[in-house]
Amino acid sequence: MAGLGAAINTGGVTRGDSVAVIGCGGVGDAAIAGARLAGAKTIIAVDVDDAKLEFATELGATHTVNAKKSDPVEAIQELTDNFGADVVIEAVGHPETYKQAFYARDLAGTVVLVGVPTPEMTLELPLLDIFGHGGALKSSWYGDCLPERDFPMYVDLYQQGRLPLEKFVTERIGIDDVDAAFDKMGDGTVLRSVVEMK
Image (cartoon, rainbow, N blue to C red):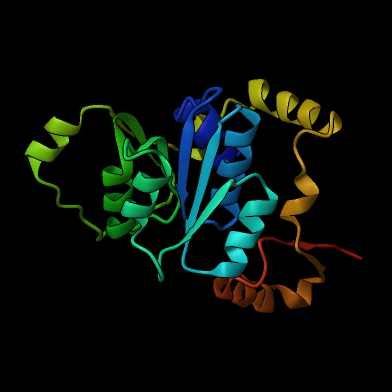
């Protein structure tokens, strides 16, 4: 819900938009799937892990940027004819990636913060840059989801074959494997592990 909603509800992605998602874990990849569902033309996945970028491609990314190998702001600008993306979704929750999102968007674009920062994190941006860039800066709490509205819609989309929920499940594990699953998520070797009770 958080990622899908960040794209559809908070970001207001519409047909033909360019979208960049910074951070391609479960939430970021759900934002990519949401952007695809909304009809985005260009969907740029940004991460530091090639395995996560591969997951992102499976869920709808049209382009990938490894931020260890390329400057993500420059790459997003280049992939959008130097305009910047219409919607940039930051799914990491870190000041540096938020700055990247801010500078990678179109002047009239929207930045959506869905990654959850820690309490001590602060962000410093020149006030003139915020004024001069226009557009919108939004935070997205649980994808601005209304369960009674959104859950039935997502169930319908899944049943129609338009929302591939199975692609989010990398492995099925037992309760004793939970610690190892968290390690795998941190390493980027899985997208989501699902605990099965037997």
